[in-house]
Image (cartoon, rainbow, N blue to C red; front, side, top):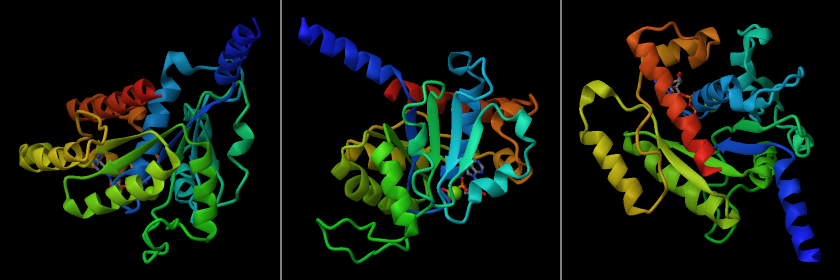
Length: 254
Ligand SMILES: Nc1ncnc2c1ncn2[C@@H]1O[C@H](COP(=O)(O)OP(=O)(O)O)[C@@H](O)[C@H]1O
Ligand SMILES: [Mg+2]
C-alpha cells in the first residue's frame, strides 16, 4: 500500500509543472533561435497545449545575455503570439521559477553559442567554465527534460554538435535529439545523406527528416513572424510542416 501510494504520488508530481526543452549547439548559425520560436509557435497553437487563463501554456525563453530573442520579440505585437516569452539576459532563477507552475506545459529555451568558452578545458573537466553565459547554461541544463541539437549539412557544425553532445549533454544524462536544419531542397540528397550517415554512425537519435532551408524563415525572423503566421503558399506550408514535424518529434521524445 505505501508503495502504491508512492507510485501515485510520483505520477502526480510528474504531471505538475512544465517540460523544459533546450536548443543547444556550441556553434552559432545552425538554427537554435529559429527552432525555438517556431516550435513554441506550433506547440502554442496546438489544442493540446491551451490554457483558459491568461498565462500561456507554452513559453519561449532566451537566456542569451545579448538578449537575441528579445530583438526578435520586439517586432511582434505580444497579443498575436501563441506563447509567452521570457528573456532572462543571463540572469539565473528566471526560468526555474516556473518549475512547479501547473499552468505551464512546455518551456522552449533558446541558448547562446558558447564557442568562446574555455576551448582548452581538459577532458573530464567541465568545458563551460565560469562566465555569465556558463551560469545561465548551467541553470537550464539542470532544468532540461530534453535537448535539441541543430546541425546542418555544412560540416562546420558537426564537430561543435559532437562536442555539445559528448561534453555537455551526455555527462549530465540529458536526453537529446539531433535535428538537421538548413537542408537546401534544390541541392539534391548528397549532402543530406552524408550528414545523416555521420549522425547515425555515432548512434545519436535524430529527427528522420530535415528542416528545409527556405528564405521565408530568414525574412520572418526579420519581421518578427513565426511559421504559424506564414501566408499559405506552397513554400510556406512546407516550411510550416517542417516545424510541425519537429514539434511532434519533441512531444514523442518527452
Ligand atoms: N530552415 C531555415 N531556412 C532559412 N533560413 C534559416 C533556417 N534556419 C535558420 N535560418 C537563418 O539562419 C540564420 C541562423 O539561424 P539562427 O536560428 O539565428 O541560429 P542560431 O540561433 O543557432 O545562431 C538566421 O539568419 C536564420 O534566419
Ligand atoms: Mg541564436
